[in-house]
Length: 292
Image 1 (cartoon, rainbow, N blue to C red):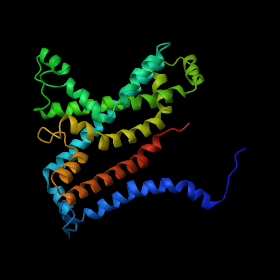
Image 2: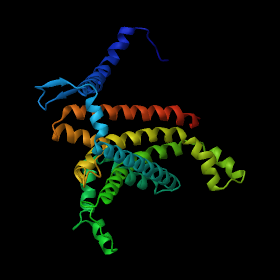
Image 3: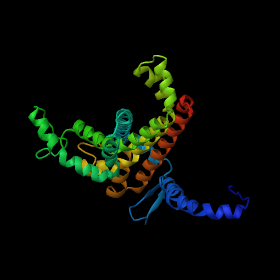
Image 4: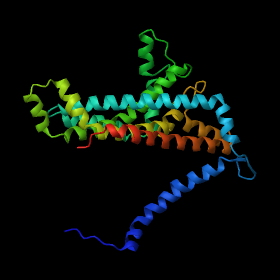
C-alpha cells in the first residue's frame, strides 16, 4: 500500500529542481523580454532609454509586422487542419489492418524522429527547382514551380514540410485513443444496424474529443514556435517575407536587425497571443469535450 507524507519540506525538496528550471528557462527570460520591450536599447546593451509603449505602437504601424501576423495564422490553421485530419484518417486505416499494423505504425512514426531543420533539408532537396523530384514532376505536368521566387508556392512548401514533420505526433495520439475505445460499444452499434459512417461520427468521434482538444492546442503551439527551423532552412522568411512568421521576425529583428527593443515587444505580443488563444480554447471548446 502506498504511503503518503505531510512533510512540506520534503515535498519542496522534490519539486525544487523543476521549479528552478522553470524559473531560469521560462519565467526569468519572459520577464526580461517583457521589461526590455519598454526600452530603446542598442545591440550590446550599452545604451538604454525608456520608450514606454513606443515599440508596440511602431509594430502595429509596421506593414511587415501585420503581414507576419497574418502569415503566422495561415500556417497555424493550415498545419493544424492537415495534421489532425490526416493523422485521424491514418490512425483509423492502420487500426483496421491486421498483421501489417506494426509495419505501418513504424513507418508513420519515423518522421517525428526527424528534427524540423532536418525535415526542411529533406524537402529542400525534393523541391529544389532544378534538381528536386517534386519540382521535376511539376515541370513534367506543365506547372511552373519555383518556390524560391513564387511567394504562394513558398508558403505551401513550408506548410507541407511542417505538416509532414508533425503528422506522426497526431497519428500516435489518435491511434492510442482509438485502441482505448471499448470494442463493446462498436459491437452494440453494429447490432443496432448503425453504418460505419454513423458509428464513427456518433460513437468514435465524440470519444476522441479529449485527445482532439489536446492536439488542437499542441498543434497551434507547434505552428507558432517550432516552424522556425523549417522556415529558416527552406526560405529564410522569403520570398518577399511571404513565409516570415512572428517567431521568425523576432529572430530577424533581434539578431540580424540588431533591434532588441522591437524584438522583445514582438515576443511579448506573441506570448500574449498564445496565452489568449489557449484560454479561449479552454473557455469555449472544452465545453464540447466529452470525457469518458
